[in-house]
Length: 254
Image 1: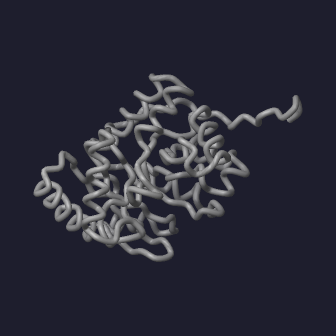
Image 2 (image 1 turned 180 degrees about the vertical axis):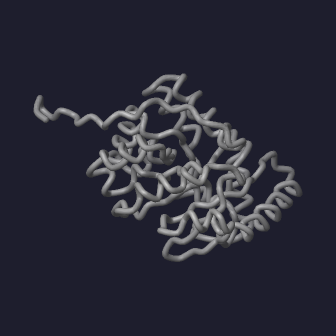
């Protein structure tokens, strides 16, 4: 199993503060059957700056620790970048780090809205040969209120990644329901943990894939898991044509 979005590096953001905590996260990942994690420290959000070259060094150091602990886990470099207007320039300069130095780039939206320039920026990123992956759209207030926003972004080539804890309901029933709607409408392409620790923000990957299997079938699970593998080698992922989120009837009325 591959986890494309995880805050496992110590003392770089709101993930583990100490190396020992990071090692505990690694042990839990192995217990869950995760073999590869892409470390994705926050960058350009309100509190944290983690430039590409710095992340490379931190990942190398952490892999040495994992080897010394005899843990069968590989950590690869990545980054979760809060959307900003000069992302293309950041990619060109090396400030922004694609997943495993490939073509897929995690993009984090503000929690409350989608900036007006988002569509144009997603287009510009693709023009440079990269693929933007919008992380946890199911927790964005504007997208929850108006899923058409996400539909238009995906229709024009952006991909999305939902959080395992959203699939399972650990962020509440409303987010769980909306996440399942996004899966049903082909508006998301990956599940990742976005884990920050082993307690309040754990991996939940096994539980998430089990939930997807029960609701959508095993073929859907295979597609999502294979998509994660394809990211590692910058190959094109599987995706169906996006659909608009259906409005559910309540007591026979819309």
